[in-house]
Image 1 (cartoon, rainbow, N blue to C red):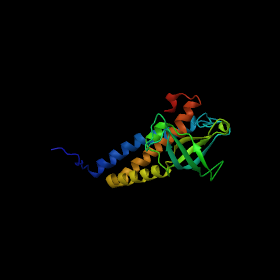
Image 2: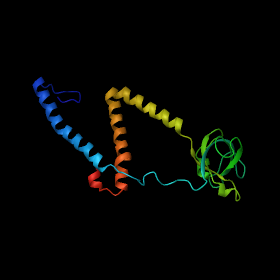
Image 3: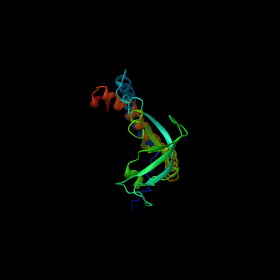
Image 4: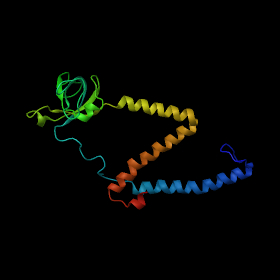
Length: 195
């Protein structure tokens, strides 16, 4: 009967032979990979991460929602009508002031509450025509860090150090993708050579 927990017991001489064959295959491949990365490593300016996501004078600031008043009255926010949102600025221009924030109705209808920490975009060019503060995103640092720690604890509980080694391998692979492969391809290196 076959089960997933069964292992094949090899004599010591066979185990050494298998390790030697694996080493003869993987070590030259690893050396070739390192040499290839060295030769193909993008040098000079790369377009990855070079484009500004904000316009001139625009700035991301942190704010805490202090008030949400549905337009047209009532208790709940209608996504089509929206709400008048005020927030206290925690950083940047106007720090400490409570200002109106432009927030899309669908964000309001899906769960913005008083006390939420948010990122707002300050656009000085909009000072004359209305609120220069526009909702950008929710602050997610703490929830993401907590989820990461919880994930690592579950991986460790299920697979112990082998699971953490697998997560480490995944992080290393993503590092190679974002630090080497994408910049090299963006600089014009042949994708076939890079991968």
